[in-house]
Length: 289
Image (cartoon, rainbow, N blue to C red; front, top):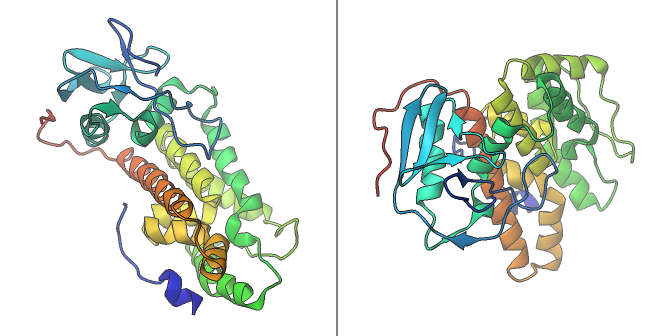
């Protein structure tokens, strides 16, 4: 009954500032409240101050222009991204703002700022360890003992994802009803650490961001491998909450807002990971109205 309610089984490949000071345009939109201290906090909204958004290729990569001024990071570095596809995606965030710039909706810009400024000053190994550490508290690994309907729901929906990850990476993950969670073998952590080492620093920032949204390394791996859609991963991460909503009812507007926000953040993070591996050149270099 619950499975038909949540409709999790379909498979698809959907992936889904500070204020500018003259003469520098600085952008520091941040993610919404959920994670962490890993990225910049969102500034307040402000009136849109530019007409046109464009991208140009410079020596260090692709740059974003707001009218005739170049975008910069909160630490006043030139906002430069490694490829044109990511530049167009970021430019689209800026171009889609209406009369008011809603910085808290600009997740791609935030992730780029974090990658460029690296405010926590972490190296690649530290980023990898931070992501792998989430396995110890992975949402999919913690199970309830009652009620029976929720026990069955977790088994039916989460077990196949864990089994997929174990087979895909040749590791053992498991699950537990203990408050301490399952004991993740050292070999599993080593294998996943080695796998994450194949990603660049920018992609790792995105991976940690998505893991923090879903509170699950397993679901994040499913997203990256296109085994899960964003909608499926989000619903799986909220399985117990969705169960309670089906049983007790929805709080008007609040639950829907949280769900849509989580989808937006997760989709942006997943897109960021894939775009950070994009090396092809897009023909049109200017984003026009």
